[in-house]
Image 1 (cartoon, rainbow, N blue to C red):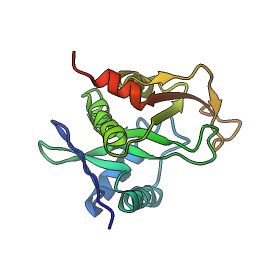
Image 2 (cartoon, rainbow, N blue to C red):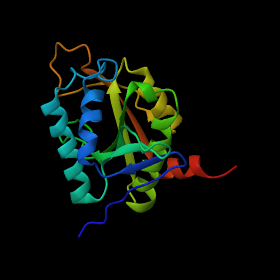
Image 3 (tube, rainbow, N blue to C red):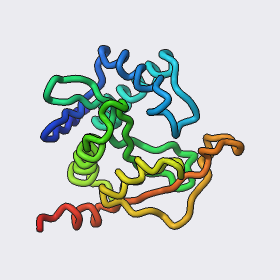
Image 4 (tube, helix red, strand yellow):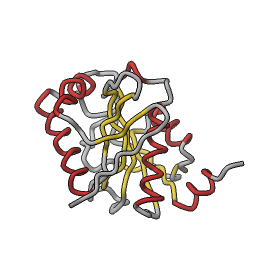
Length: 189
């Protein structure tokens, strides 16, 4: 049986998905602000399918894109976590870190806080050697989170192979963080 890892931070719980997450996750995925740097918003069926994939990934491996809830109030705010990146990416195989939070929870430091807990799982429990993150070149908010995590940008952008050549979102930047860099950044003082 796989042990499900469910990290916590001072303010947040990262946990396995629950059926009651479906409605707030669908609302998040239908919000054009949240999905600005994705090909489009998701309808309820596509959102539910994404939730099932996230739940299955965690059930099979013990880790993945966790549902995130605030400890105070217990409300679902989105997802943060680590998962196997698509094999079609030019830098695969690798494990990526990612996040998607409801817009009303932006600017509170939640993405960085939950991502740090995810990196601790990646490097201290799973003993991974590296984590990557990537986003459309225009997505400066996510790039700032990557930078706050101590991730380093690769010098060259790449074309995301799952996006059409005509998409303005096709050009992506890639950030990396090695276990050694993370430990150096995490040392006190």
